[in-house]
Image 1 (cartoon, helix red, strand yellow):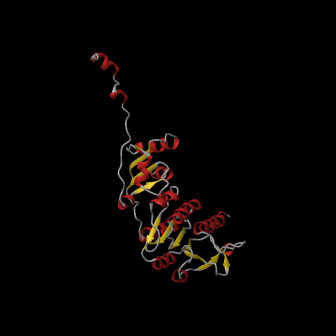
Image 2 (image 1 turned 135 degrees about the horizontal axis):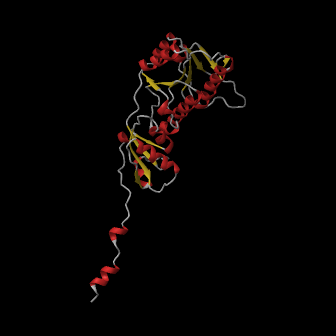
Image 3 (image 1 turned 120 degrees about the vertical axis):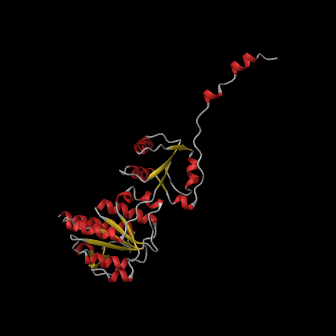
Amino acid sequence: MSNPSSKAKNQPNIRRRKVQKPEKVTKQSNDEQGNLIFGLHAIQAALEQPVTRVTEVWVADERQDARIDAITKAAMSHGLHPKKVERVQLDGMMPDTRHQGGIARCSPIKELTETDLLKLVDNLIDNGTAPLLLILDGVQDPHNLGACLRTAEAAGAHAVIAPKDRASGLTATVMKVSSGAAERLPFVQVTNLARILRELQQSGVWLVGTSGDSEATLFEADLKGPLAIILGAEGRGIRRLTREHCDQVIYIPMQGGAESLNVSVAAGVCLFETARQRSL
């Protein structure tokens, strides 16, 4: 018969050695995924806003580095406490994404209206600033939209405009690819693109469309005044009705065998040529 006191002495102290297990989270439905963003840069950008949209943050328990520390600090400044979970659980929350060990739930970005856009343009002109707008006529690839937003912000654009139908909105992929630009740059989706083009013209904005079959080059155009650059969808370019509303249609001269540029690359070329002209 064993000695009870000896057995108790040798038994591990379960309570003292118990390790806190990561909190479990369940797989999100499609509707719930619409409120999630992923990627450390996108989460950091959302948390850096004075009034953040973020309501919850999950980070992989295996990551202990400066980027996670920065997200934790930013979250706590808003009264949020990131939850450490196993990476496989993050994979289940947003399958087929490169979340980098971070996912956040957010309230939707405030939807801007056509009225908000026209008010922004009028205020810029009244204050002596020439508006610079990027209009995307039916870009459906969220990676391209995210890249366009990032480029537009870097070039000093004041807003990006796109139709609501048959075009990408601000998805989680757009938020990640934009590297925070989608949090800071106004993005306006309109129900009738032709109507907003007419209203912009009435506000004094010069509409410059892009098409490979035009006669004037980008570098021949005067881009210094109130301006909207219009780029078309992947493959088919700007639509006929959109082109009819343009004050000028230009093309980007290219060398080599390439027939066209990716829409985000074309946006960068056009926007930075505009910035160059305005800096002279």
